[in-house]
Image (cartoon, rainbow, N blue to C red; front, side, top):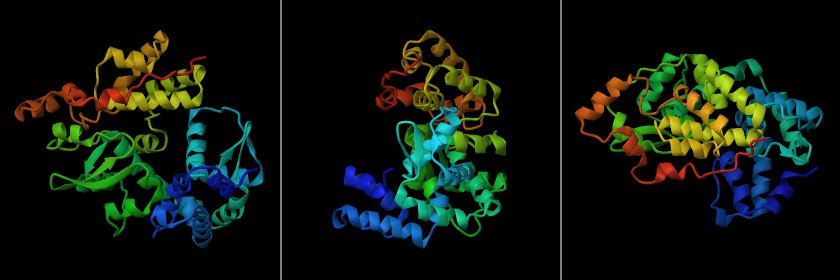
Length: 339
């Protein structure tokens, strides 16, 4: 059984520092703090404010931590969605893995127990939904003006009380992993940090009126699992991938499809690359792409988008997306590990 302290010592200083920056509000510069001081500060933060641990993830992830407090969990490859939940816990360094099991680092057992003891599931559920909707929206649209972002949240009855969107993102560890606020051409935007490319997207749709076309449950699904599992074809696509691929390779493909669909790429070459030239996988990807969000369409019809492009004499979206080589670079050919 390993400890978080051992993990920090075994890895580069930046590994521990990345966690330290997230859980310590007034972080020192990396050059002004040692590995031991980073570790001590993280543990102190957890003990002083156990909510930090809870706020890192979802209600489902808290349930996994509860189970892990009682016993280690054997790796059983129970599907991609469970893989995502465990992956997030691992990324947050709350859970480690051995050859055949997952476990909580020994020096985090007591801080996590403290967090679980004060955890109020009924109260936290609203926050979990709010955060999932925020993450879902930025995954669906990729970039939104701050006011637009707030208006869409309101349309789903998500209220952030008196706190501003930028401040909420700044203090919320979970949503901060997926989005940030920045200024672009005199306006403030919420942009994706998962799938970057907001300048190309805004070049086409900046003046197009928002018309959200996802119901609340669908947005939550995208926020939690990257995709709208309420669309039957997407659910069937995931089931197909689970039959043939390990979960980590599924994650690669899902990310590739998200970006491909988002940019409306229309490239046989890219699909072959995503599928590693496996014909049955290539066909499955082609069939599901239309059901993932297209960041350019933005909830509007293709005809409206084309009128907007024509009126402003902007290059068509497929050309804009490839103009600087950035887009193709996202699709470096991987061995997908097909069984």
